[in-house]
Length: 310
Ligand SMILES: [Zn+2]
Image 1: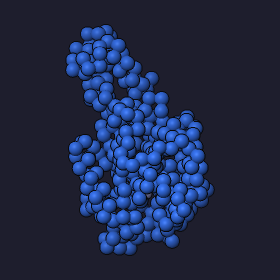
Image 2 (image 1 turned 90 degrees about the vertical axis):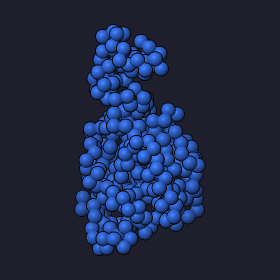
Image 3 (image 1 turned 180 degrees about the horizontal axis):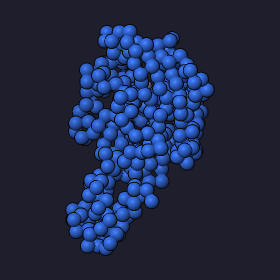
Image 4 (image 1 turned 180 degrees about the vertical axis):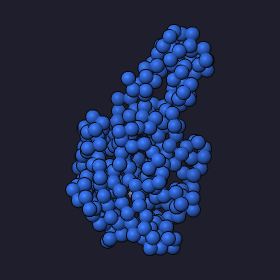
Protein backbone atom coordinates (compact mmCIF):
# COMPACT_ATOMS: atom_id res chain seq x y z
CA UNK A 1 0.00 0.00 0.00
CA UNK A 2 1.17 3.52 -0.66
CA UNK A 3 2.43 5.53 2.31
CA UNK A 4 -0.32 8.14 2.13
CA UNK A 5 -2.92 5.38 2.11
CA UNK A 6 -1.42 3.96 5.27
CA UNK A 7 -1.60 7.32 7.00
CA UNK A 8 -5.20 7.77 5.89
CA UNK A 9 -6.16 4.35 7.22
CA UNK A 10 -4.33 4.98 10.47
CA UNK A 11 -6.06 8.31 10.90
CA UNK A 12 -9.37 6.48 10.64
CA UNK A 13 -8.16 4.05 13.24
CA UNK A 14 -7.11 6.90 15.50
CA UNK A 15 -10.59 8.35 15.45
CA UNK A 16 -12.10 4.97 16.20
CA UNK A 17 -9.89 4.69 19.28
CA UNK A 18 -10.30 8.22 20.66
CA UNK A 19 -12.35 11.31 20.01
CA UNK A 20 -10.37 13.60 17.72
CA UNK A 21 -9.64 16.35 20.23
CA UNK A 22 -8.54 13.87 22.84
CA UNK A 23 -6.35 11.99 20.42
CA UNK A 24 -4.67 15.22 19.34
CA UNK A 25 -3.61 16.11 22.88
CA UNK A 26 -2.64 12.67 24.15
CA UNK A 27 -1.02 11.34 21.00
CA UNK A 28 1.76 9.75 22.99
CA UNK A 29 -0.79 7.48 24.64
CA UNK A 30 -2.36 6.38 21.38
CA UNK A 31 -0.04 3.36 21.32
CA UNK A 32 -2.03 1.74 24.12
CA UNK A 33 -5.11 1.43 21.90
CA UNK A 34 -3.83 -1.60 20.00
CA UNK A 35 -1.18 -2.69 17.57
CA UNK A 36 -2.51 -0.59 14.69
CA UNK A 37 -2.07 2.47 16.77
CA UNK A 38 1.56 1.68 17.32
CA UNK A 39 1.88 2.11 13.58
CA UNK A 40 -0.11 5.30 13.83
CA UNK A 41 2.32 6.72 16.35
CA UNK A 42 5.21 5.90 14.04
CA UNK A 43 3.48 7.48 11.07
CA UNK A 44 2.74 10.68 12.95
CA UNK A 45 6.20 10.85 14.43
CA UNK A 46 7.64 10.58 10.92
CA UNK A 47 5.21 12.97 9.26
CA UNK A 48 4.66 15.57 11.96
CA UNK A 49 1.32 16.83 13.20
CA UNK A 50 0.35 18.07 9.74
CA UNK A 51 -0.26 14.44 8.75
CA UNK A 52 -3.31 14.36 10.98
CA UNK A 53 -4.48 17.90 10.22
CA UNK A 54 -4.56 18.20 6.42
CA UNK A 55 -7.28 16.91 4.14
CA UNK A 56 -4.78 16.80 1.26
CA UNK A 57 -3.21 13.38 0.73
CA UNK A 58 -0.67 14.28 -1.93
CA UNK A 59 0.10 16.58 -4.81
CA UNK A 60 1.50 15.65 -8.20
CA UNK A 61 3.59 18.24 -10.04
CA UNK A 62 3.31 17.85 -13.82
CA UNK A 63 5.65 19.25 -16.45
CA UNK A 64 3.32 21.47 -18.48
CA UNK A 65 5.81 23.04 -20.85
CA UNK A 66 9.14 24.81 -21.05
CA UNK A 67 10.12 28.13 -22.55
CA UNK A 68 13.10 30.34 -23.26
CA UNK A 69 13.13 34.08 -23.71
CA UNK A 70 15.85 36.00 -25.54
CA UNK A 71 15.27 39.06 -23.34
CA UNK A 72 14.38 38.45 -19.71
CA UNK A 73 14.11 42.19 -19.04
CA UNK A 74 10.49 42.05 -20.18
CA UNK A 75 9.97 40.46 -16.76
CA UNK A 76 12.54 42.58 -14.92
CA UNK A 77 12.42 46.04 -16.53
CA UNK A 78 15.85 47.59 -16.91
CA UNK A 79 17.62 44.50 -15.51
CA UNK A 80 19.49 41.88 -17.58
CA UNK A 81 18.52 43.54 -20.85
CA UNK A 82 19.05 41.19 -23.79
CA UNK A 83 19.85 38.18 -21.59
CA UNK A 84 18.13 34.87 -22.22
CA UNK A 85 16.42 32.81 -19.51
CA UNK A 86 14.72 29.44 -19.33
CA UNK A 87 11.34 29.11 -17.64
CA UNK A 88 9.59 26.05 -16.24
CA UNK A 89 5.82 25.67 -16.41
CA UNK A 90 3.97 23.29 -14.09
CA UNK A 91 0.48 22.00 -13.49
CA UNK A 92 -0.48 20.63 -10.08
CA UNK A 93 -2.87 17.78 -9.32
CA UNK A 94 -4.12 17.65 -5.74
CA UNK A 95 -5.68 14.57 -4.19
CA UNK A 96 -8.13 15.52 -1.42
CA UNK A 97 -10.20 12.56 -0.24
CA UNK A 98 -12.16 11.35 -3.25
CA UNK A 99 -11.68 14.62 -5.09
CA UNK A 100 -9.04 15.62 -7.62
CA UNK A 101 -8.26 19.26 -8.11
CA UNK A 102 -6.19 20.52 -11.04
CA UNK A 103 -4.36 23.83 -10.69
CA UNK A 104 -3.43 25.26 -14.11
CA UNK A 105 -3.39 23.33 -17.38
CA UNK A 106 -0.12 24.53 -18.92
CA UNK A 107 0.76 25.08 -22.55
CA UNK A 108 -1.33 23.41 -25.21
CA UNK A 109 -0.45 19.75 -25.75
CA UNK A 110 -0.56 20.52 -29.50
CA UNK A 111 2.87 22.16 -29.12
CA UNK A 112 4.30 18.67 -28.56
CA UNK A 113 3.78 18.07 -32.30
CA UNK A 114 6.60 20.57 -32.95
CA UNK A 115 9.70 19.13 -31.25
CA UNK A 116 11.70 22.14 -32.44
CA UNK A 117 9.36 24.38 -30.44
CA UNK A 118 7.11 27.24 -31.47
CA UNK A 119 7.76 30.95 -31.17
CA UNK A 120 5.38 33.25 -29.33
CA UNK A 121 5.03 36.85 -28.15
CA UNK A 122 6.49 38.22 -31.37
CA UNK A 123 9.64 36.12 -31.14
CA UNK A 124 10.31 36.96 -27.46
CA UNK A 125 9.64 33.36 -26.41
CA UNK A 126 10.19 29.83 -27.72
CA UNK A 127 7.87 27.19 -26.25
CA UNK A 128 8.22 23.43 -25.96
CA UNK A 129 5.95 20.70 -24.63
CA UNK A 130 8.07 17.59 -24.12
CA UNK A 131 5.50 15.63 -22.11
CA UNK A 132 1.83 16.29 -22.74
CA UNK A 133 -0.51 16.88 -19.83
CA UNK A 134 -2.84 14.21 -21.22
CA UNK A 135 -0.07 11.59 -21.25
CA UNK A 136 1.02 12.40 -17.69
CA UNK A 137 -2.55 12.08 -16.43
CA UNK A 138 -2.83 8.75 -18.27
CA UNK A 139 0.35 7.61 -16.56
CA UNK A 140 -1.35 8.32 -13.23
CA UNK A 141 -4.50 6.51 -14.28
CA UNK A 142 -6.50 9.74 -14.24
CA UNK A 143 -8.99 10.57 -16.98
CA UNK A 144 -9.76 14.25 -17.64
CA UNK A 145 -13.34 13.57 -16.53
CA UNK A 146 -12.01 12.38 -13.14
CA UNK A 147 -10.99 15.95 -12.31
CA UNK A 148 -13.70 17.28 -9.99
CA UNK A 149 -12.31 20.76 -9.30
CA UNK A 150 -10.33 23.05 -11.58
CA UNK A 151 -8.81 26.47 -11.05
CA UNK A 152 -6.38 28.44 -13.16
CA UNK A 153 -4.03 31.06 -11.80
CA UNK A 154 -5.06 33.17 -14.81
CA UNK A 155 -6.04 32.83 -18.44
CA UNK A 156 -2.78 33.39 -20.31
CA UNK A 157 -2.12 30.58 -22.75
CA UNK A 158 0.76 28.98 -20.80
CA UNK A 159 -1.73 28.30 -17.97
CA UNK A 160 -4.99 27.52 -19.79
CA UNK A 161 -3.61 25.71 -22.86
CA UNK A 162 -5.44 22.46 -22.13
CA UNK A 163 -8.41 23.83 -20.20
CA UNK A 164 -10.91 22.53 -22.76
CA UNK A 165 -10.15 18.95 -21.66
CA UNK A 166 -11.74 19.45 -18.26
CA UNK A 167 -15.37 20.13 -18.93
CA UNK A 168 -16.69 17.99 -16.06
CA UNK A 169 -14.92 19.90 -13.28
CA UNK A 170 -16.24 22.72 -11.17
CA UNK A 171 -14.41 25.90 -12.16
CA UNK A 172 -13.18 28.35 -9.51
CA UNK A 173 -12.44 31.76 -10.99
CA UNK A 174 -12.32 35.34 -9.75
CA UNK A 175 -15.25 37.36 -11.10
CA UNK A 176 -12.80 39.92 -12.54
CA UNK A 177 -10.96 37.20 -14.48
CA UNK A 178 -14.24 35.74 -15.73
CA UNK A 179 -15.27 39.16 -16.99
CA UNK A 180 -11.93 39.58 -18.80
CA UNK A 181 -11.81 36.04 -20.24
CA UNK A 182 -15.44 35.63 -21.27
CA UNK A 183 -16.33 39.30 -21.84
CA UNK A 184 -16.25 41.18 -25.15
CA UNK A 185 -12.50 42.01 -25.25
CA UNK A 186 -10.41 39.04 -24.12
CA UNK A 187 -7.54 40.03 -26.44
CA UNK A 188 -7.18 43.28 -24.48
CA UNK A 189 -5.91 41.12 -21.61
CA UNK A 190 -3.75 38.84 -23.76
CA UNK A 191 -6.30 36.00 -23.60
CA UNK A 192 -7.08 33.62 -26.48
CA UNK A 193 -10.57 32.12 -25.95
CA UNK A 194 -9.91 29.14 -28.24
CA UNK A 195 -7.79 27.76 -25.37
CA UNK A 196 -10.60 27.74 -22.83
CA UNK A 197 -13.98 28.47 -24.42
CA UNK A 198 -15.47 25.09 -23.45
CA UNK A 199 -15.17 26.09 -19.77
CA UNK A 200 -18.06 28.45 -20.33
CA UNK A 201 -20.39 25.46 -19.85
CA UNK A 202 -18.68 24.12 -16.69
CA UNK A 203 -20.27 24.45 -13.29
CA UNK A 204 -18.60 27.64 -12.06
CA UNK A 205 -18.04 29.41 -8.78
CA UNK A 206 -17.17 33.07 -9.34
CA UNK A 207 -15.10 34.48 -6.52
CA UNK A 208 -14.47 37.93 -5.13
CA UNK A 209 -11.47 37.19 -2.96
CA UNK A 210 -10.04 34.19 -1.15
CA UNK A 211 -11.91 30.87 -1.08
CA UNK A 212 -11.47 27.73 1.03
CA UNK A 213 -12.14 25.04 -1.59
CA UNK A 214 -12.90 22.06 0.66
CA UNK A 215 -13.95 23.94 3.77
CA UNK A 216 -11.14 22.52 5.91
CA UNK A 217 -8.43 25.09 5.21
CA UNK A 218 -6.24 22.61 3.32
CA UNK A 219 -6.66 24.17 -0.14
CA UNK A 220 -7.36 27.89 -0.31
CA UNK A 221 -7.53 30.08 -3.39
CA UNK A 222 -5.82 33.42 -2.70
CA UNK A 223 -6.84 36.46 -4.67
CA UNK A 224 -3.60 37.92 -6.10
CA UNK A 225 -4.61 40.46 -8.79
CA UNK A 226 -2.12 42.50 -10.79
CA UNK A 227 -0.61 40.23 -13.44
CA UNK A 228 -4.17 39.92 -14.77
CA UNK A 229 -7.39 41.47 -13.36
CA UNK A 230 -8.42 38.36 -11.46
CA UNK A 231 -5.16 36.51 -10.98
CA UNK A 232 -5.12 34.00 -8.13
CA UNK A 233 -2.60 31.83 -6.26
CA UNK A 234 -3.19 28.64 -4.28
CA UNK A 235 -2.38 27.69 -0.71
CA UNK A 236 -1.97 23.93 -0.29
CA UNK A 237 -1.35 22.46 3.16
CA UNK A 238 0.66 19.33 2.40
CA UNK A 239 0.55 16.62 5.07
CA UNK A 240 4.32 16.37 5.49
CA UNK A 241 5.94 19.38 3.84
CA UNK A 242 3.47 21.81 5.35
CA UNK A 243 2.01 24.89 3.69
CA UNK A 244 3.03 25.90 0.19
CA UNK A 245 1.68 28.71 -1.96
CA UNK A 246 1.62 28.03 -5.71
CA UNK A 247 2.48 31.39 -7.22
CA UNK A 248 0.87 31.31 -10.63
CA UNK A 249 2.40 34.42 -12.26
CA UNK A 250 2.16 36.55 -9.11
CA UNK A 251 5.94 36.44 -9.58
CA UNK A 252 8.02 34.65 -12.24
CA UNK A 253 11.37 33.86 -10.61
CA UNK A 254 13.21 34.20 -7.34
CA UNK A 255 15.24 37.37 -8.10
CA UNK A 256 12.05 39.19 -9.05
CA UNK A 257 10.47 38.07 -5.78
CA UNK A 258 13.45 39.17 -3.69
CA UNK A 259 13.41 42.58 -5.37
CA UNK A 260 9.62 42.85 -5.80
CA UNK A 261 9.95 43.54 -9.54
CA UNK A 262 6.86 43.92 -11.70
CA UNK A 263 7.01 42.66 -15.31
CA UNK A 264 6.41 45.25 -18.01
CA UNK A 265 3.28 43.56 -19.33
CA UNK A 266 1.42 43.15 -16.03
CA UNK A 267 -2.14 44.41 -16.12
CA UNK A 268 -1.78 46.69 -13.07
CA UNK A 269 1.63 47.59 -11.69
CA UNK A 270 0.56 49.11 -8.35
CA UNK A 271 -1.89 46.28 -7.70
CA UNK A 272 0.91 43.81 -8.47
CA UNK A 273 3.11 45.43 -5.83
CA UNK A 274 0.33 45.40 -3.22
CA UNK A 275 -0.33 41.74 -3.98
CA UNK A 276 3.34 40.81 -3.48
CA UNK A 277 3.41 42.58 -0.12
CA UNK A 278 0.22 40.85 0.94
CA UNK A 279 1.58 37.42 -0.01
CA UNK A 280 4.91 38.10 1.73
CA UNK A 281 2.97 38.78 4.94
CA UNK A 282 0.78 35.75 4.37
CA UNK A 283 3.80 33.46 3.92
CA UNK A 284 5.35 34.70 7.15
CA UNK A 285 2.13 34.36 9.14
CA UNK A 286 1.44 30.86 7.80
CA UNK A 287 5.00 29.59 7.82
CA UNK A 288 4.46 28.79 4.14
CA UNK A 289 6.91 28.27 1.27
CA UNK A 290 6.43 30.06 -2.04
CA UNK A 291 6.65 27.72 -5.03
CA UNK A 292 7.35 29.94 -8.03
CA UNK A 293 5.88 28.26 -11.07
CA UNK A 294 8.21 29.63 -13.75
CA UNK A 295 11.44 29.51 -11.70
CA UNK A 296 13.26 26.67 -13.43
CA UNK A 297 15.93 26.11 -10.77
CA UNK A 298 13.33 25.87 -8.03
CA UNK A 299 11.03 23.75 -10.15
CA UNK A 300 13.83 21.31 -11.03
CA UNK A 301 14.28 20.62 -7.30
CA UNK A 302 10.64 19.53 -6.87
CA UNK A 303 9.71 15.90 -7.67
CA UNK A 304 7.57 15.60 -10.80
CA UNK A 305 5.22 12.89 -12.08
CA UNK A 306 5.26 9.96 -11.51
CA UNK A 307 6.58 11.03 -8.10
CA UNK A 308 4.52 13.21 -5.84
CA UNK A 309 4.88 15.47 -2.84
CA UNK A 310 3.20 15.02 0.53
ZN1 LIG B 1 2.92 32.20 -17.04
